[in-house]
Image (cartoon, rainbow, N blue to C red; front, side):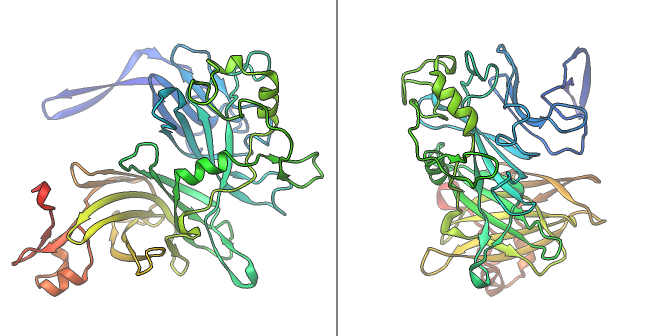
Length: 411
C-alpha cells in the first residue's frame, strides 16, 4: 500500500503519491481488486475484513497499523469465517464507557455444514471489541471477543416456507439521538437463479445485542445438528469487552483459560437477528434489476419526520423511496418518488454516499462518478395538487410553486 497526500492548490485538487512511505498491504487490502472487502480506521488503527493470501482463501478480520501487534480471526476454522464477502464495518458504542466500544462487521458467507441443507449463503453481523488484544496462552494475537449472528430478511411464503433474501449487498447506519442505537438498513438479494428479487430490511441494535447475549450455537461433532448451548457459560461471558462496566478485567490477556477456550469453539450465536416488524420494508421481485446500494436521509416534513431511501441498482438507476407508516404504525408503506437514470449506459452502482449538509447524493460505478441533488421539487408540476400528491417529504407548496420545505426552526 502507498499513501496519498491531498494538495488543494487554488482550483486544482491534486492527489500525489508519497514515494517515501510504502506499507505492506497484507491484512489491509486484498491481492484481487475485485474481492469484496470492508475497512474502518479508528484512532490510527485499521480494522479490515479481507483475504490475506494471493489465492483469496485465507479470509480474516484484521486490526493493523497503530502501536499494537496485528490481530486477526482464527485461521482455517469455518466456524469463524466460511468464505466470507465483507460489506462494511462500523464503530458502535456499547455504553457511555469507551472501553466497551465494539466494531461491527457486516458480511455474507457460505452457511456452515449442518446449518443448512445444501449450499446456501447467510448474511451475518459480526462483533469484536475495540480493546481486544488477544489471549495470553491461547488465541495469541487472535480475537477473543469475536461473535457472529445471522441476519434474517425474509417474507412468509406458501406452505409456511419463507422466501429468504440472503445475499447481503450493502448496509447503511441511520444515526439517532442515541449514538448507541442507530437503525441498520440492509439491502439484500436472493441467491436463487430462478427467482430473482431484492429487499430492504431494517434492524435495531437492541435486537442485535439481545441476540449476542443469547444462546451460543453448539454441536457435539460434524454429524450433529446445531443446537443452543445448554451448559455453563464461563465468566466473564465470551464476547464481553474487558472493562469496569461488565467484568472488572483490564485486558483480554487476563481472561481465564476457560473463557478463551469457549470463545474459540463457540463464535456463532444460535438465534438470528430478525428485522423490525419481522419483514422487509421494501421488496422488488417483478423487475429486471436488483438492488446494490443504499443511503438514507431523515427528513423533517410539514407533517412529521420521514426516512427517505436512495437505492442504487445493477443497471445504473437510483430509486428514491419514502417509507410511510400505515394506520396501525406497525407496518410501513413504501412510495416510489423517483426512478433516476444516472449513467448513460447500464452499469452496476457500486458506491453511494450522501451529504445532508450539501443536500447531494454521490454515486459511483466502474464508468465514473455522478452527483445528484436529494430533491427536485420542480419536477412535480406547477399546481398545488400535483405537489401534494407527489408525497415527497422534501417538498411543499409555498403558495406559488412546489419548493423545498424547511421547518420553521431551520429557516
